[in-house]
Length: 298
Image (cartoon, rainbow, N blue to C red; front, side, top):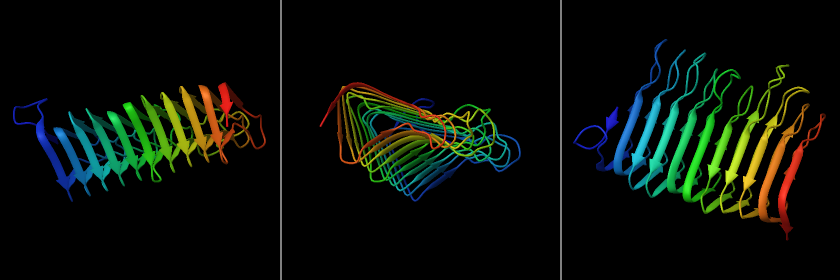
């Protein structure tokens, strides 16, 4: 399914606006992945609409691509490209805009039920996510690691209970955020957990990487963990900025029986207020490592 300008492939319509609309290229058959959905316009708006490119039974999710030379505004909508059981991996969702991407009350789902999770990629000058949820979780440790990547040249902002989840049953995925000048998160959660103990040594928590000139976390959790056995590792979290401010927030890379993970914060200035916690401990195994390259300031 392609929506574009009248002059053929690669051209842009002035605007694409979908309200109370469903676009469905999902596949319910045994073989073959979900289909592709492409929207190209100077401005794209979705309101109470669904784009669905999921796979069924033993097939992978498809590809959803939204490209806007201006802005991309999505409210109370769903973009879904999940995979069926035993499929190789979840689908791919790629959002790219010239000026801004604004999401409110929106679900973006590329998780895989019985296989490796998919990927979600967003790039714009400013990315703002309000009360939205991203999920790329997977269940299989032998397929590509699921990923969420947010790139903003000016800012990336999360608020109002936004959740970015790369939680996996056998291993956590990877979440990468480059906020450009500023990354702020209020009342939100970023997680990359490993979920169960199967007795396998390959049970790592996921990876969270945050980079911006200024990073501000308020009532927010950055958390990786493992529930695996003694050989599992809690994952890793890195934060790089010129200034980091934590208020009533948690940065956690923990383990149940295995090794705690690694937390590395590199910033000339680190302000920690309220009940903020930085912790890489293990409940019954070896504690992990917290590395802070900078100066604490009240």
